[in-house]
Image (tube, rainbow, N blue to C red; front, top):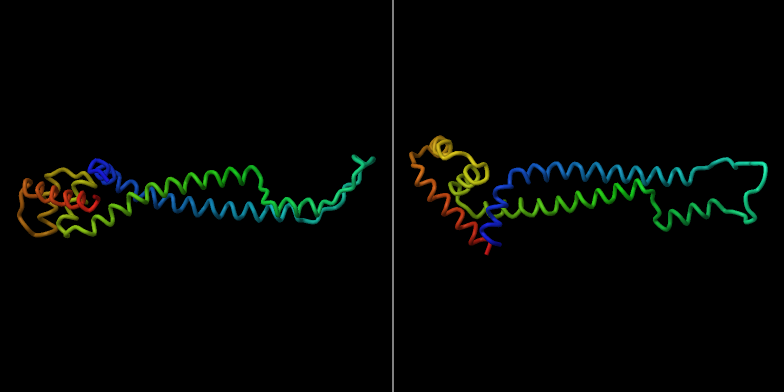
Length: 167
């Protein structure tokens, strides 16, 4: 993977992490809605109905409604509404797959860094905090005096490690 691609994934890491959580919920809800719609379809098709008696027969062939329902259900027939929900579910799963790949990739790369390297990548690269804020937070979190230049070198070392991991 190229360094440019890794930088792009790092920049989107937080939003992709949040979006993956939302997609997981949407996928679960849509799967449940599809299950309910399929159960209602079977119930509606298989329910006992009274025979409709009209003045005159509409055709010459005799019908077997139970057989027709059985064939429909056995062939996997579903309504247009269920088809639309399944298409939407496929799109959500595809988006989740793309976004979760980047999230898992960065999670695994961050595991290969030291705590300080991971900290600088999370605060400066992923969250995009200003250097002044990063220096102050670093002093507070690690109880060390440091300069902006030393943190920039730490950031570059961390990114170089991530790039090497991605080769």
